[in-house]
Length: 196
Length: 115
Image (cartoon, rainbow over all chains, first blue to last red; front, top):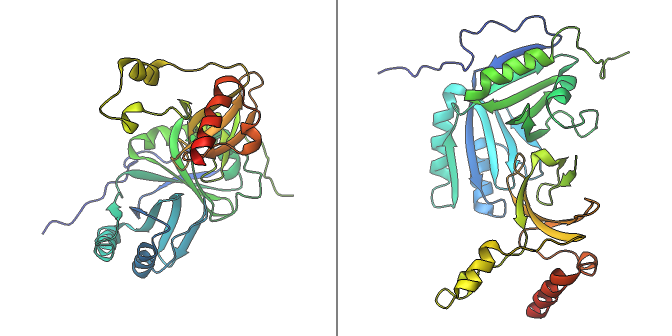
């Protein structure tokens, strides 16, 4: 049997150089699009049973448990993040558990590319790319939001302080990386979040 | 830049994160009466819009956010948003009280129907 081959969206691309934060692609994550009604108790319970974690109900939040992370996308949509090779299994398990419930679980691992911004200036680079004010205390680890990022649709998740994952549609991966490399060019630091 | 707040996900964002959807509360005559609509009714439904100076009611989509449609009450002169409310809702009473002309008549009709 043929083993599935995963090709990262930025395969063969040179590492971004001369930037004041670290930029790299995360290609080991699988993604599952999960839809259903928050008000449907059966749906919420079945999803929790499979994922081991409650689906976040509060806007722009995420819940994690072990290897699985659930990002809130909209009142009836979540993005489940798991290990890449586990995604088809998990999507199948979700579909099975949700049979008969008005819902949807689809493996969309190849739909988006994940770019990770790491470093003291990560939030500053995000401020250059979006219209959001990252100095606001809302932007704490766990925060998720879909936003207009460098003119394209993107989704970002603050993983921990100074680590931000940006999810863009796969075909935009090179463009987003080009943009970030320019926005984070050495010498263009604003120093908004500099400590000390 | 206008700041818009989505009443569904409660996110405040720049107007470029949202999508404008035209005049609010336009009822489709064929929904209420599929058989007996006239050409005039259909014409008004498709093309006739009011263009008030002052308070106006519009549809907006949280385009780059949660993706849901909602309503906004905006002053066309000052560009100030008076209220954001759900897609199935009527504006808050204090905003309805400020409505003039066609909008005042419309909301009076809706309120009457509710009773």
